[in-house]
Amino acid sequence: MNDRNRHPDNNRPRRGPSGAGSEGPSDGRLVEVHSQLSRDKDEPAEGFSLTPIFIVFLFCGFGFWAGLYLTQNSGNFAPSAFDLNAPKASLAGGPVAFEPDAAKGQTLFLANCAACHQATGLGVPGAFPPLVKSVWVTGSEDRLIKAILAGFAGEIEVNGVKYNGNMPNIGAGLKDSQVAHIATYVRQAWGNVAEPVMDTKVAEVRKAIGNRAQYLPADLLKEHPLETK
Image 1 (cartoon, helix red, strand yellow):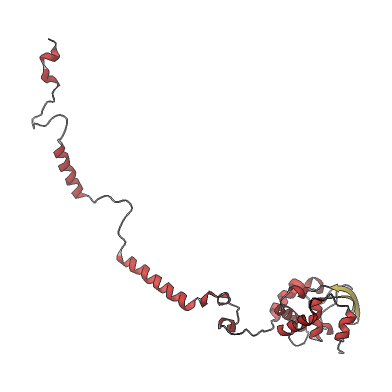
Image 2 (cartoon, one colour; image 1 turned 30 degrees about the vertical axis):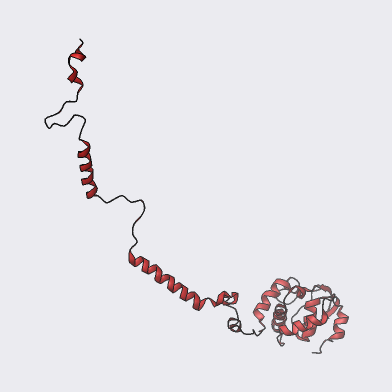
């Protein structure tokens, strides 16, 4: 018989003085220790914590205030309500009275007319006539509006100087109010003195001439002769 068979107890776990096996604490002991540790610590949580109640009330109050503010100040979300330059009548929902604006006219003039007549209104000698102290500008508003709407081609005389040029119909692509602003500006800029032009007058002239071709100066002067100074 070999040593393994003669000493079968050699492979059994030996117990220490306390009687516990060398393999470690029993299952019951482990459960007891784990329970004690669990009572000493908070249960683990994954990204969740209670929101303080005052934060909830704060957000509710903010939402109520925002809704009240929009109700009283939204202007029904109309585009004119957010236009600082919109006339008050428009914001009130009533008809908007047109007001000739030389400042707006200057902006439109610089964008559409200054290439020929120059920002100074003096034109280009021998090529483009001046608008300064010109009865073509300060005289009949009908004649001026027609020139802007339809343009004209041919020889004209301004302040004793003849010009043979071609004025395009820049007003055909502009609104009545824009044409009125331009006409008002040139009639009151550079020392010119003349009445402003209303958008209703531009609409009237536009309807009368339709989509006509450029005027010949003689035809335009036949309808509206130059005024004597």
